[in-house]
Image (cartoon, rainbow, N blue to C red; front, side):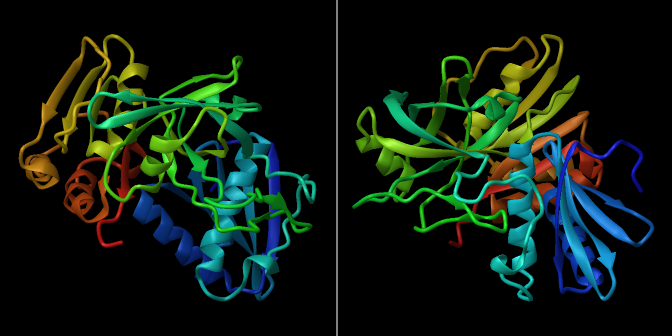
Length: 336
């Protein structure tokens, strides 16, 4: 049931899918990702993500999928998320979803900007820092952690995404677009920086190691949640999450207490903070999970690591912390 005003911007698409199937999908999403779940007297269900929400409501024998947000870029991001999960049910194609809304066919999606590499520099022995110059990145400066780098084609001209007549992004080419952390951003100057953990087989690593100044690439986002803030925080992650941990540490008030657990061995320049306790966990995720089984002494929890290694931590944390105070994310999957 809604207790707050609906976000300003809205879009919806009718689907020939039973509401009960969509309701279960949304509940599964809330359970898997720790999202806040809301229900409107059995007639509608939605989850809150970032600066908006997406969900479904009954309509005759089918349903209407909807997205709502406080900005047009977040509205589009949530439409894309809803489309992805609805199509994943196997009942409809993305082309079958005709979204209402203000999008202009043929334009770039509102959450996409074309950018260029300014420079790439080593950051210690294990990371690279890449600065990207791009226009129209104000949407990424709202205390968001994540964005997506869209790599150009390795050979030949790159065709960037465009909007279809039904308001969806059309990708003429299958471009690699992984999520990364915004390490620093200057909206007025038109640049952002991201830190890349160097490892074998990483397509972004290979791109960054060879990229010349001026190389074109895409910037998408925002994505994921914002920066958590609290009087006391328990945070942790492996090397892939170190840049996000650094963003979180830097954003806390001087009197905040931050208990940060590192599951990797790589060096990284974490910011100083008077309330920071930095612990390298020799037993990794399983060791911290064993400790947290007895209780969690923190107002909020934020942990990101490999999918399988996250599971014992998720079980331990959610015994003691409500889902709306815990962000537990799988940053990668060793099985893939």
